[in-house]
Length: 114
Image 1 (spheres, rainbow, N blue to C red):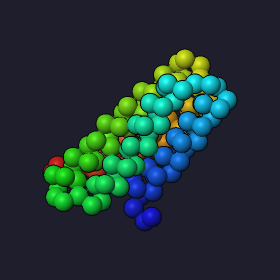
Image 2 (image 1 turned 120 degrees about the horizontal axis):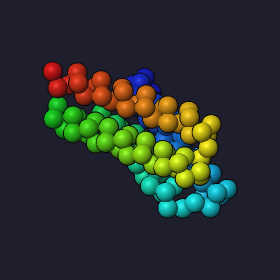
Image 3 (image 1 turned 30 degrees about the vertical axis):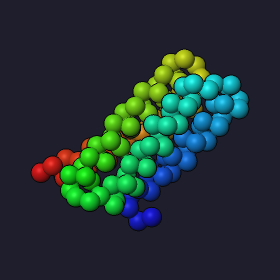
Image 4 (image 1 turned 120 degrees about the vertical axis):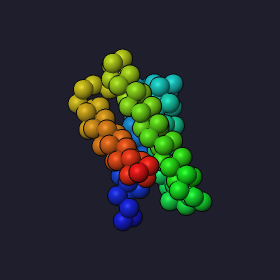
């Protein structure tokens, strides 16, 4: 993948899937982990869909959904941290990656709307 946002969101989805497995297997947490799995993997799926957009508006729409999913994923990660399912060290890098993706998506959307 030579598309930076596609590559970053795919790698992020892998981390989210592994986080989900860990939360289920080690912490026996199934509800919040399912939420973060859905939103965290949806980011990359929407970015991938946007690459085949039928129009500029379709591209913007898909990337906007990806951005919304990023915001939701941040929420679930922070909640998992606040409820002690993830400690500060465990959430730090994955949350940082999520914020980086959010910034890239925001930048892409700003440049598309000019």
